[in-house]
Image (tube, rainbow, N blue to C red; front, side, top):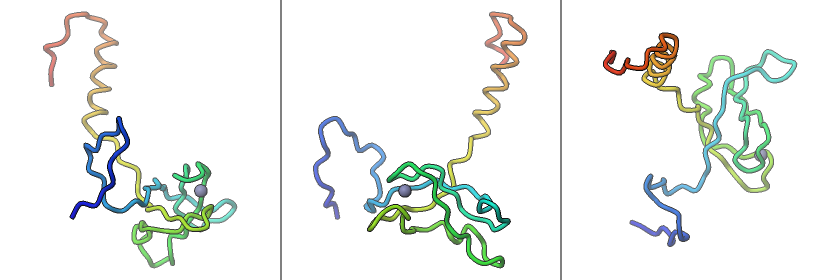
Amino acid sequence: MTSIPALPYGVTNKKARRASPTPLAFARLAAFPGTRVLAWVVDECPYCGARHFHSTGGAKEDPKDRLVEVKAPCQEAGEYVLAEPPKQRKGNRQAKRKQERRQAKSTPLDDDDDW
Ligand SMILES: [Zn+2]
């Protein structure tokens, strides 16, 4: 069932976003300031750009169980979905290392060294 309104000109829908309009908020595990209590820290709120803290639940709970839709503290009525930021791909790091090695060697014709 497609009830997606027409996209504004220039906006492509390549990724076919999920039906839910709830924005993602990337969160990392860190202690609440001044405590040792773990929290999910949203460094950049999708609404206000500020930092927000969310409970990770009890000590016996898996913090990842709290990576769900939560209420944005800065919004009267607004939620976002807590999510872990995408991990850097191994391939990228290898490619970067390769590049560094290549620069260190400073030999211009090193392109067949492809492993
Ligand atoms: Zn906010």
